[in-house]
Every structure is written in C-alpha cells, then in structure tokens.
Length: 556
View 1 (cartoon, rainbow, N blue to C red):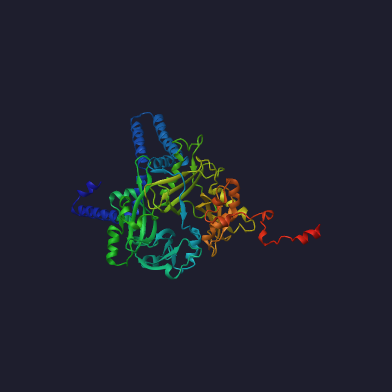
View 2 (view 1 turned 45 degrees about the horizontal axis):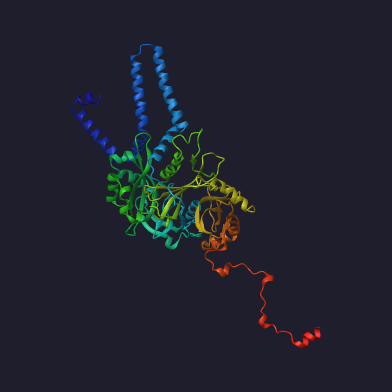
C-alpha cells in the first residue's frame, strides 16, 4: 500500500517522507508513554511466542483442511487453548507460581543460626507520619509517600512537599520546593524548623508531563533498558557530597521463561531549578544518573541505605515457599510452604524497614537497613512464625533467613498478635484504636537474644479510610515465645528493657531455670543477694554485759 502510494508522484513521496520523520520523532519523544507496552511484551514474551506458534500451526491446519466440520473443531481447539491458558495461568496463578520459582532458583540464600539485634527502633507507624505531614502543609500541596532512609547517620522519614495532583496549574508551573525529614525514632516527630529542608527539584512525582519523575527516568533509558527496566519507589536522601538528591529505585526484569523482577540499580536526580535548557534535556534524553547494582559499592551513600523496591523484596521473601522443593507449595504437600501474612486492619503491610546490627555474628552482612518479613505457614488457621527473612535494603544480592520452625521454637507469628494486644487492654475502645505494624524487636535480655514484636496503637475515626495518627502513641511489645504483652513508654526507650524484666523476669527465671546473675547480669552481687531470714539474724554478743555473781545467786 505504501509502495503504491510512493510511486504515484513527487508529492506523495514528500508526504511519505514527512510522515516517516514525524513517526520517528513521536516514537523518540513519546517513549515514556508506550514503554509500559514494551514491558508488558517483555514480561510475557514466552507466552506470546508459545501462543503465536500454536496459532500458526492451527491456522496452517485450518487452511489445508477441506472439511467444514474439521475447520470448526480447529477453531474450537484454538478457543479452548486460550481459555485453558487463562484458567491455569491466571485463575490458578500457575504463571505466578513459576515466576516465584524462578526467583527462588536465582536467590543468594544464607541461613543464619541466630537473629541479629535491632537498633534505632522507629516509633510511629507509616500512616501516622502521613497524617502528621498533611497537618503541616497547605491546600495546594501534598507529600510524597514517606520512606525510611539514612540521613547523617540517623534513620529518618523523608518525603517531598510537592504540588497536589488535584491542581493542574501548580503541577505544570511549580517545582518541589521542600523536603520533610523527621527522626523515625522520635515519638513526637516535628514537621517544622530544621526538619523542613528548603530544596528545589524541577522533577517530581506529582509534576506533569516531562517533569514527572516516572517520565523523566524512562526518557533516560536506552533502547535495551526500555524493555528491561521499570521505575519504582522514589526516595529523598543526601549523596556523598551532602546534597539532597532524588533516588528512584529501578526494577529489572530477568529471564526468558516466566521473567521475574529483580533489583536494577537506581537513577539519581539532582536538585535544580527549571529552565529552558532543562526542558530540552528532559524532552530529549530525560534526567538522572543511572547507577547499576554493580557500581553501588562505589557510592557510599547508597550502602546500607533503603533503595530496594518492595515489589522485589516481597517476591523474594515469598519464594521461600520452595525451600521444601518445587511441589511443596501445592495443596497436597505444604510441609514447609509459607506465606507473607497481610493483616486486614493494617494500612502498611510487610516488609517493615528495620535497622539490624550483625556485630559478633561472623557472617558476611552489613549493619544497616533491611526489609524484614515474618513468614507463616500457608494455611489461614496456622499463625506460627516459620521464618524471619532479612533482605538488605540497599539491593545487595543476599537474603538471610532464620528458620524458627526447624528449630522447634514454637513462636507466634504476627497474625496472632492483634488479638493478644486487644486482650491485654480490655478497657480500650478497639473500634477506634487498632494495633498496627508488628515489626521485630530483638534484644539480648536475661542471657540470650529474645524476639519481640513491637506495635503502635493507631487511632482511626469511624468515617476515616486511613489511620488518623496520635500525638502520644501507645506502644506494645509482645514476647513471641511467651505470648505476653508488655506496654512500654514511647518517650523513654532506655527503660524498655527494665520494664520487660519487671514483668517477665520471674516467669523466665522459673521457666528457664535462670540464676539471678543470668537474669540481672548488669547488677552487682550485693544488689541481687536474697534478703536474710529473720530467724538467722546474728546477735552482736560483744555489746551484751554478762550477769554478775550476785545476780546469779539472787536468781537461784
């Protein structure tokens, strides 16, 4: 058709050339718009090829067949093939099953014999931070999803104050002018003064067109990366020069048979004003500096940081269901199959970003932020803690897991915790208060490491879709082994250990046959010496005057 139109004359040739140039320019400048279609083809390339070969084979048989009945059967066969594929692949989730198995086969697994200690425990849950942030901004503003990152050697919630999606003019015209950075360990995070950092980004998550973070990052991809890389979560942190940058986590799709997501590095976008040169750069080649996983070690500000997409870490943790073999997750096996428990009353699901300390464990692990998962048996009625999974949040190719089930520890999982918290404080109005985000709390107490889960009580109005937050949060620690709930003071973390010992010390002593020295190793002997019985109190005989001979004679 195009060839015949081309041969009609010079005018038609000019039109074809001009249309070709326009098409090429559109393909170049609008690649951020059609990139999701390229990714879709990449994710299901094996399915497309298999389906194409099947259709080609069946249609060739269809053309060679002279019988009407046979042709109808061939068409019915094609229809049944796709119905069966949909039912098996999507309805029964066999495609996801194979994808997860591919993840498991490519994991760098390391089993650990003890849990690392936790440090810098965060107090407020995710949605409380969101609520308090929105209490501190104006009508035409919104905050980006808060993320826990390391800033100046401390863990902080960071989020950008950006134009709201409801106001199109601001999205087109304004910049991101401010970043919130509040301590994750504080029970009273302040969204004022030094916690509001004035920094300008011409690229933002809520900004429109080429100034949108997703669009700018995709425009930066080369042709191969358009088929393999996908922008994910956005983080705000300081680089090695101490400047605030926007770090976009990238997902890389690997494999041919049932492709699976993996950590693909990051795209770093520097702060800066919007100008005409910036506009042409964004439109032509996008914005950002790509740092692949292999080069992360050359950038200290990314080591021990939180840059791993949760979509990737969740699939990696879920893939541990294959520890018992390829067929173990199937309904007739399930001896070691596990799941990620998602609590219906919790707005923020696992993983929980936790700061772990591996000191003294003699394994190749870096202290810092990790994604923690508490995996449970796959059945809905089983709520024991089967595995603790720790995935380095900086994308390091490692997965550490502790097998609670194999060690016969019999500890309770997070699914069992909400009811225990509710039961411990029956005077609460639990219709407007919810225990949320059961995250790990591991401390060495009474002679050994003990695993607790820490939960914050979040308030929620009846007509609210999300938690409303609290100025003074209530915290509950639950001993996963003894199932007891210890209520601690959020304002005095240094007293948590003594509060735990005061409530559970005597129970541990009796159950585990501990000595006072094991229970209170920091006390001196005089502090833990038991009180002396009354009938054994010594008498100071030196102060008693013996009776005289006259007194003895009078008695006689």
